[in-house]
Length: 269
Image 1 (cartoon, helix red, strand yellow):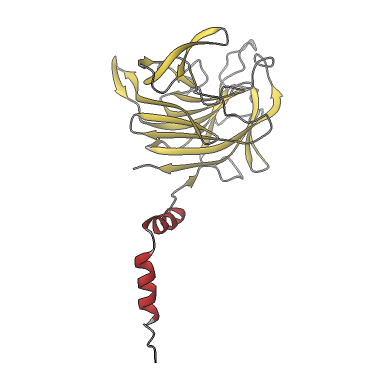
Image 2: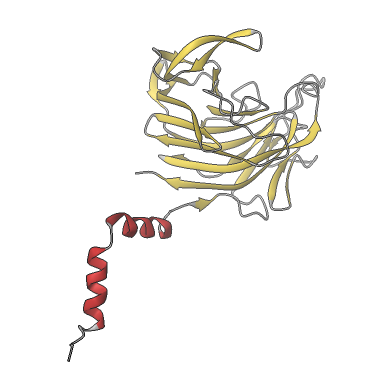
């Protein structure tokens, strides 16, 4: 007669021989740690800031949480930003050592002075200081550019600096830097940096954008492809360069209709 071991011993034995990756993978799936920043229903957790439409003849600032024209709204589970008046939707919380992930797609409407230009928006992160520090419209921050054909580019707002591997290129009729892995490190960059390659999907399709910010290093990811990496992110405070590693998140209103959804953040150790 064959004796069967107790069920508990069988379970323990199976547990012992399972590959570590399987166990770790299951744990990771359950403990992903993503926190939604948008509930799909309303704009709770966010503040609005509107300045004005450039070249409209008026530079009167609309202000914080004043949106008489409905620039920011929720449509079919996504945030709609009309782009008519410039400004930004701003997270109430600040984030440091984080992985931000969201989806965006373009709408149809465009407004002066960009009605003939590329559709434009942007994800601003490590946003600090007063609203409107950059050109009356946005906070001091780093920008993951959201613009037709240029998604993933870097822009410095209000003098933020970083170091990265790059080479000089001519883009859109002007000299810029292009992120080029293996190239010489350019230090103190506070100008546009063109992403490594274009991975944006055709208009009307949803794109996944990610920002990975760990300590003073940042990475831009477009539809799963790393397009830019930089280090030594810093700002000038009282005449001294100091690290910039924490701040709010802003979604730009800049002349074009755009939709954002599935906005979530994961803390990094």
